Length: 396
Image (cartoon, rainbow, N blue to C red; front, side):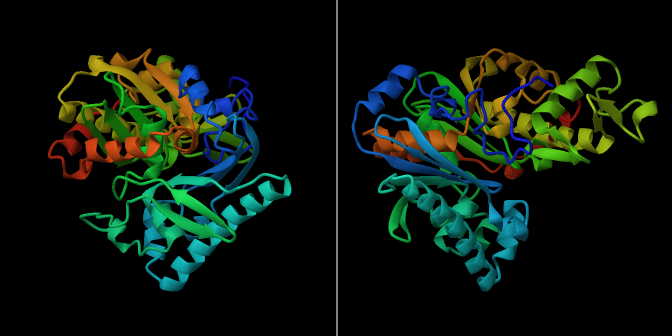
């Protein structure tokens, strides 16, 4: 695999890069440099940004000029109650467990703020984003309504939360499965302001997507499963989701894997080893299901918006998986449509970028309100042709 600055074990925070100590890894790839400079001209003091993810909690302290001063990243301790949001919603049906889950996340956030304080960093201004379930658990709301049809979310407005001696602002969300992390991503990319049509894809256990411009936006979420999240353990060798995509594309090119996702007979039982990593039939099937879900989501968004793929001017690929994803391999396996090739930009942690923007952009609150007004969230499971489109995208 191509040598890049990666953790030994990926926890999906989206913050890796050639220079991980430079905040520009997160923001400047997403925000135009001149826009970033304009934000930083406004001296609003140091601040803290946080992304509360299902897998990872990532925090950064930033100075008045927009330079990162410190970082704090920890696995989300709620993982002991389940790997995905559905399992945590089910666990939270027990009030004592819900309280414990809230306490665990607060502890991580407080630890991060205390670490920043030890370094002389003021955490007076704090901005947070996360998926709706994580925000519900943090704020102490009952999550039951998020786990059952019609998947309604009663608490989506921006709000403040006390964390010890600190107070943080939580960016608003859109729906039960399209949270404030996605709103933050749309804000960071100024998608609701531009006339050109953009597509934001945040790849993880759930693949959230937003398509639109200053006139209208459509969002959805689709279950992608484990293939995109972090890595798959192979003894002492880690298999990254982005690397799995590249490997599968290579297997297709060499005829070891056919278009239906079936490994050649010689490798079907034991798998095939590439670069010291064994790729099994199970790995391939997990990836097939995940890529079909994302591809189907993209097709339906485009159809609902009433445009062709060619009309999309920019594709923002967010998340840790997306940061290292090779575009040509993603197109080769059918994760991304051929017609979007050349338009894809990996933007890292767009939730943190949005929190960063919220502090500096004087019109951020107005823009977020506009995002909520413009965006229609659709439930893919309720779309009459979703199952057929999904199946059509299963083949490579």
